[in-house]
Image (cartoon, rainbow, N blue to C red):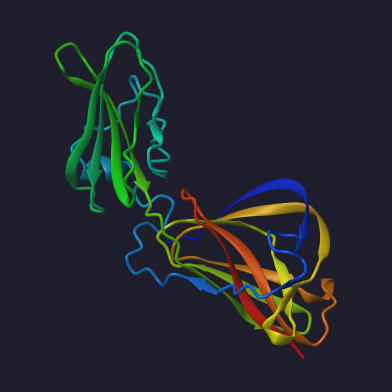
Length: 270
């Protein structure tokens, strides 16, 4: 399976170490992991099926292109939030369109019809997802003739991941000037994070002190699929560290949820 990490760019001026934590002494315990390896990872790929797979495994007639634009042909799978409004948002004032939202298992077998609506007045083709999480849906729109014959079809899969994060950070390799810092996504949600991090030094009595370091330039945002690993190089010469025990602290979010945590990996400078 091809590894995919989506990267987007945005320009800010950031202060690494000036996070939500105070820059003074801190006794806060920051774990290196949250949750545990999720062996039931559902979708480790951005596109687990092609459109051809979906039409073959479901009961729908294939896309013809006579009416619909085929918005889902090249992108037939999306991870979304609960209660999100989904669909193509196309309008067909002179035609009748049947829209179905169907809950399915990972083999794409139908479990139940969640919603079925008939659009006859040119309404935008869209439905609102339920509030449940950990559910896979097919969204279908079928343009019908006066005799109920299906003239065109467009189908897409939507997955609402559980409100759950399972992840770990660690130091994979350390030299005098370089750390190889690893973020591992144990699933089932995608992780999102920036290039930003901060370093704290452990002082006496278990206290940690944030080391301020001002950096400016382009930050980079990453999206990491379940089951994948992201490596980041940290150049220690930028920090001018003396002997001691340190930790790299990394803010991480679970995509399509409200979960946001900090994870930390310790290292020693002799």
